[in-house]
Length: 305
Ligand code: PSU
Ligand code: MN
Image 1 (tube, rainbow, N blue to C red):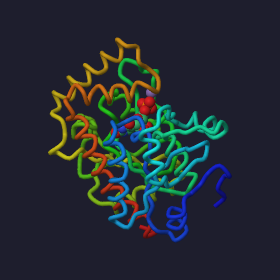
Image 2: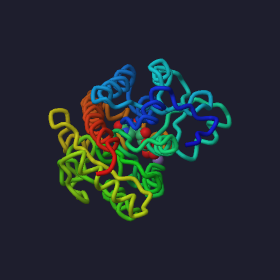
Image 3: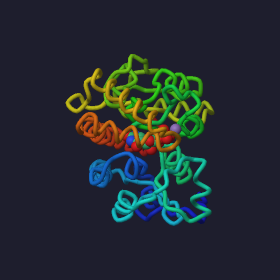
Image 4: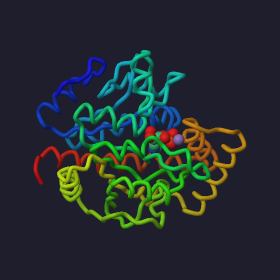
């Protein structure tokens, strides 16, 4: 596989890919813009530890001085977690960041683009972006990236701050199968249920991989979304969650926050409004997703199912 000159696949990831050993990609926007310091660094390193515990090589993706790095080092993760002015890189921003030598953290969309280019097939995140409430024209770049990238993406659904029915419809239209991992409902990120259906319930990594391989054999190039509910002990009460989201969105409206800043702003507000409960839920679901993604990465590396 030929790798572009601006991409560095770091040695552990390169070796694992060459040997056919399991690899899972992790994004860095959640580190730079999604979680407060120092939880962001702790969580990023913890997700890597969870993957390694299963024998899976973590590939945290980010851009440093215009170099695309697949498999950031802990020092580089710390840089993205603490330095001011780290860009949030979706697909449209990538060429600019590379050509202009910028530092940036990759969103779900940005990570999908780069991890696929590196030959990775499993990606673990918290919640995907989607259609924003009352701004139906603000559609996250995550959705078209999911429609166009053959990758198994493990998440807790779409962030509850979004229009979940519209987001769910979008995935359906663009041929992204939604597999509920031991659940029959699309999770609402902070809470296990949204009232929206999944396309199928699956109970094992083996089932996920079998479906994903058949999906791509049909010629489709879209992602397969595996949705995992947040752990019950840390999940928010649905009424509390909805009230907090409404309050956070009203605050964003009042301060006229929009575009790429909206999601981080609202997540930040939620931590304050819920006195840290939304943060605990976010951290817990990210860890759980890493456990599920690790098993899927192991299974896909075993070859044909
Ligand atoms: N999930 C989280 N926290 C986050 C995000 C997802 O638990 O911070 C990030 C992801 O990187 C996702 C991005 O791609 O938010 C979506 O941003 P936007 O709505 O601007 O596309
Ligand atoms: Mn957006």
